[in-house]
Length: 102
Image 1: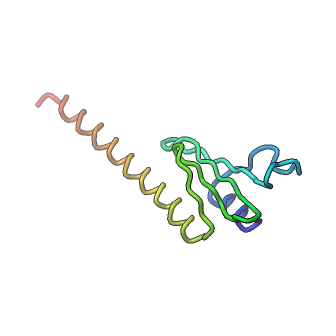
Image 2: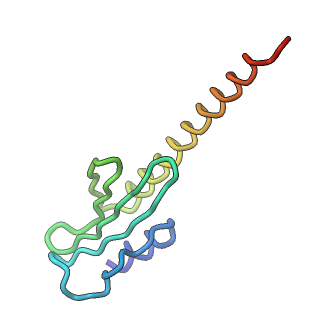
């Protein structure tokens, strides 16, 4: 579990308040990352029969028990964010160019 915890902390996730208490159901530890374009991203470390990390992004749940798949997914989110910003910038520039008096 500490490997997932270390990985999430290195990737900008913050531990949810109360993770240190021993009264958590199913021994799940939650981490939160807020992105200005994607909103909140929740990561829940699961132990027991189904060890891994469950990510909740835009209301969709994704489960990972492999660091490579988790890394590819998080990089894909960053790429999707970059594409979104490019579209917004392109629309903004296009709108400004249409308003020019030529």
